[in-house]
Image (cartoon, rainbow, N blue to C red; front, side, top):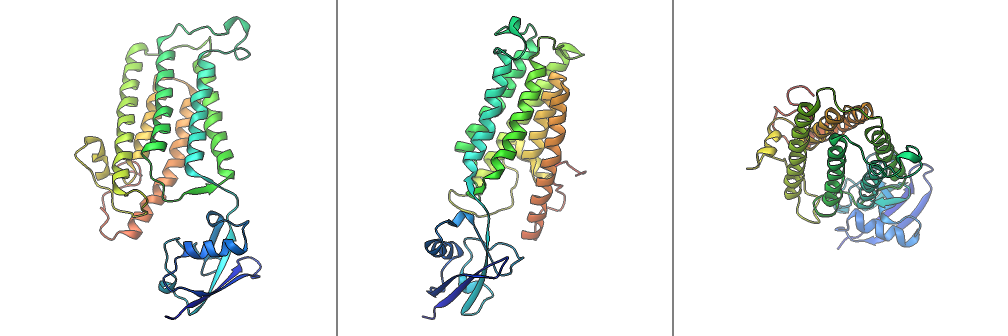
Length: 308
């Protein structure tokens, strides 16, 4: 059997970092990363990006050496992705924070609103309903992280946890401060507005969960297989007929409902920022679907039916 020689160079300096001989033709990039780690323990596999061109795309872990456009002496270029942390850890941290922070304001712990308001309770029912909805949302996210989501990548850069937590924790504190403030005033149209907003919130939360379950069923445990998502018998998944990422559509809808319910500017801004970011993600996933699947449904838009 013919073996390969693999030369690994630094993508920036072109310095030779490692030379591997007698590499099996069926060896995957993941296996090559493990061999590279033996000579450079500081660069564990999740931290490595190996590519055929210094400025090219990273090779996938499942790519097989003999199927790559290389000769029997293959040259790969290495980039350090930096310290890594698991997706699960990041998600649990960024979601647990808002849940805890919001409750601090809801219970009006000392040093937030002044001594005379310590551990007092709001007289407005919408404040208590908002706390229930906010807590439900983040408990749902935590449970989905543990039992529903299947991640195609095991890790992300460590710096992301600081960026993500600043966003989620900061907005949670900002909106919670105003919603639970002793001077908070209920929505302009009273109970009618709150009931409409609650209906929007609940429907969108159910829709979001339904989409997450449908996406989970598309990918077997431990697999990175990608398939075109289609509607199921669950009516909430029928939005797949019109958009590529209905989970984002429902997520934005939930926060719009919460903004209407509380009539709070920080919540509206959080909804707007979230919508902007999720639109970017949705467009990226939509492009990936179109590129990967020739028979991808042509009527779908990334996040908003018929518009965006």
